[in-house]
Image (cartoon, rainbow, N blue to C red):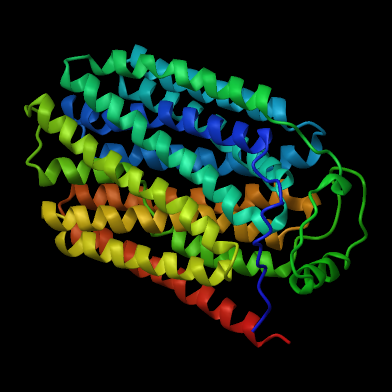
Length: 427
């Protein structure tokens, strides 16, 4: 068994202005995005479009995100300053999302959604690379857990405000237009609060045990280091092996927007339902995101004390159970609430631990590219899964939709479990 990185040293400074700026920007941006997302499925239903259209919109957006995230990773390898590029991404996301409230055609909604997600995608690897630079490696779990908690708190606040505004009679168009305020505030928070470190020497030191660090530096040393932003140590084989499991799990990890649709269906939602019932469906989604926000930091804190990969395998396994439950009992509101809670926990584990583990696997010079490849792989999986689930739901086959998602997700669990076993056998 390999020695783990324990850190109980309270003198380590990791909650810096850069960390706070990233977390605040994540919170505000997700507030904006999720307020729009909360009313989007219900708006589509009101104009006569069902889960197939939702799957197409989300799947196409995920496809473009997969390209933009890879592009963001490549950009991060080639620019000296990541901060202004990421800030522009936050601003463009907020503006495009709000503009959905100005249009009413499906083509226009799809186009603006895609623009917003392209910007949201390319900024991600830049932000994640800056986060990894901002903290010691012994605190990756906490830092990325806090960032995910900010994301999920935004995903709570946005739908709650949207539900309240629907309740009091606001038009959905106006609710979406209002999201421009937190969207642009996110860009300002990121640009003015974060600071960049532009050399490997500036990476924060840590009091971690040296066993894992030594092994990773040895593997990275196989390629000559370079000060140029476009070159550096090769991406380690362990990262590529890790990525295979992430991709397989992602093929069963459909958009969480479908949870709003399922909640609406379980509550007897249709095009003529009241604002109160619409608000209740959105509130269930906000409840899911609140649980996920609370779980994200707890899981991240735990990950700094135990093996991150093992913890991720457990989170993936919970995701498989959740999808299986949705397939068997998604029509029952009681079982749907159980599935919402399980989904919130596994989503927190997935989004926190994938980044924290990748940050450990990757040499600093390759982090932007590595984070871009990781995010792109996830987006491709989400695209395929969202399209499949949307169309299967359209044809009234929820058990096939979620059962198949559980089956392919299980392949990712098995692969990563095998990787854990192989690593534990290493001397």
